Length: 84
Image 1 (tube, rainbow, N blue to C red):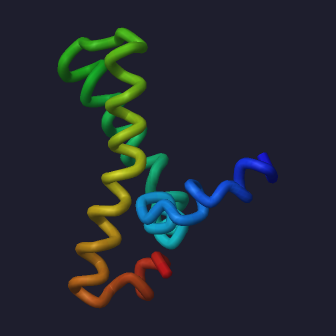
Image 2: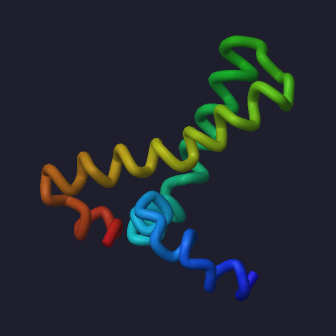
């Protein structure tokens, strides 16, 4: 893992750097988005296939918190909400 971190291709990746700077809101909020997406898929749409559910809850767990972070930042509430 340490050798992978030394690769220039990973060190200069803008997307990974962006996610690294936003890791606190992702960490704090991901459980709510993952659980919510899973509940909607399984209970609402009766979708329980792992190949369908897993990518959707992964994306919800990353992009949901980022949306909340940017909304809180636009409203200048990220400090009040504990998002950095």
